[in-house]
Image 1 (spheres, each protein chain N blue to C red):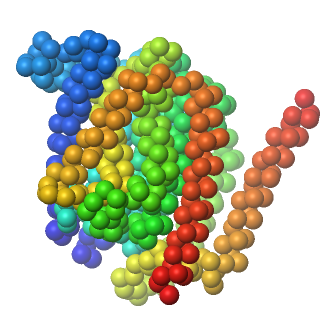
Image 2 (spheres, one colour; image 1 turned 180 degrees about the vertical axis):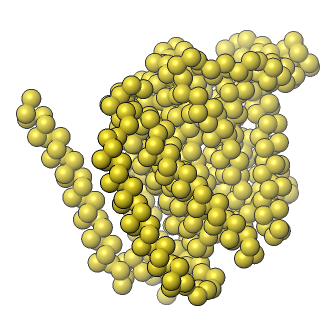
Image 3 (cartoon, helix red, strand yellow; image 1 turned 30 degrees about the vertical axis):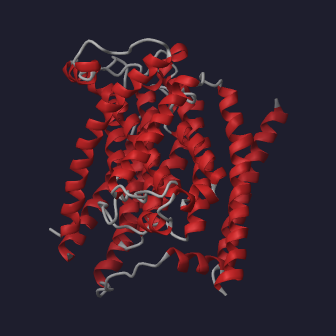
Length: 326
Length: 169
């Protein structure tokens, strides 16, 4: 077997382990932050500062019986949780965590992530449909219009950065940015960064855009009937997607592993954790938007802004090429 | 490496064929869509094998990520339930004609391949996206524009159909 294939397989196993671990930490962070924002202590009984609480929750989830509703479509019902989790691991392949530290050296890394990210929405709607439950179906319907809508400004903002860098290779995009914060792409593309963050929240179904699983309206949305690890897979995929989205933002806008003094991988982890913490803060700060508001934000604000940003970027990149390169 | 490529070709062909059969034979529309997705993924794998990852990723991004999601939306709007019209098996005449079409096309193609086998074409070269873009806007500009006209016609046709139905009410 070629070494490339073995390398990919080993990295996929490592990513699966990392995703499980990160999800445990994230659940704890989310509950603690939520608790303190609402002036509650959060979990504190199991382990010191409640650190073992997510582990206990995970064991409980694994021990639960897997139930399928009588009228559900069995093939699609069990396909959806697998299809939501497995492609997510592929998204970690082209991410450069440090200088030369990536699983797969591919020229189209950005495109790979964007292409395989589409599976999340797809498996959500398959799962939502297969359960034969009206709340799940409503959640699936919301997922469709949300993921299709928010994908476009996200693509356009990513494309603007790729215009500036002149490459779709993530390692090259990082290399092209400098060590200090004022050399990072976020300084030349601030609008694209804001658009990317907002539409990333929409794509990953995080509050304030968590309409597909709005508890107060749809019980649990697209995963209403899933029990045990069936639900656990959707849950893991949500956190894994959040990490991917934050990592892509770090690579494209925040200089990736570049930074003064500290070693590269540490900078990368630091930036990703700060972004994820920001997402958690958003969740417990802003109330959920209404569905018409959700679509209006996208089609009336993000989309025109992203298109204008892309056109301006293309114009200035061309001007700069004529002025300096010639 | 050649053996690996052959194995990959076999696996992708199997995925494409199974997906196609599932798409045609499934009783529910959503299951048929899953078959379609499998076929599209197999085709993306074939592009990978031809050393054009750009085409493969675009195939997944556009067809799996967008087109199939929209197809699902259309299916959901029609409220296709388990006992719907499409769940019944097609009439015998239709099945026979479909079988005839498959055997004629498949027969001609396999006869061609078996009698005129292609000598090895060598490992395909990866074309950079820069070259691809310059080609689309340069020598192949006319074809590129014509494709967008086709899309425009399709969109106008959809609007026209919806318009007439609304007037008829």
